[in-house]
Length: 96
Image 1 (tube, one colour):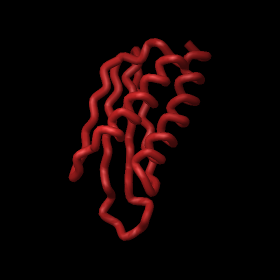
Image 2 (cartoon, rainbow, N blue to C red):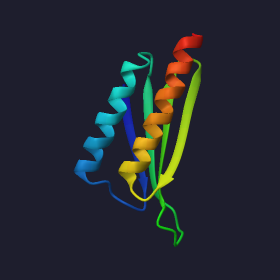
Image 3 (cartoon, rainbow, N blue to C red):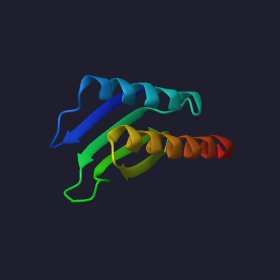
C-alpha cells in the first residue's frame, strides 16, 4: 500500500512518520485490498488545546474511506483515526 503524508504549516518529524507508517500498515491486516492511503496533518488555528487534526483517506476498490479526528497531539489523532478506520474496514470486508 502506498502511503502519502501531506502536512500544512508544519514538518512532521521522523518519529511521527514512523509511528504513522506502523499504525497504517496494521490496517492491511483487517482489509487486504487497500490500494492507497493519504494522511493529512494540520494544526487548526484555534486557542483550544485540541488543535491537531489528522485525516486519513483510504482508497479501496470502488470506494474511499475518510476519517478525520482532532485532539491534543498528532499521535492521539492518528490513533483515533486508525481505530475508526479499522471498524469501517471490518464492516466493509463483511459486506463484500
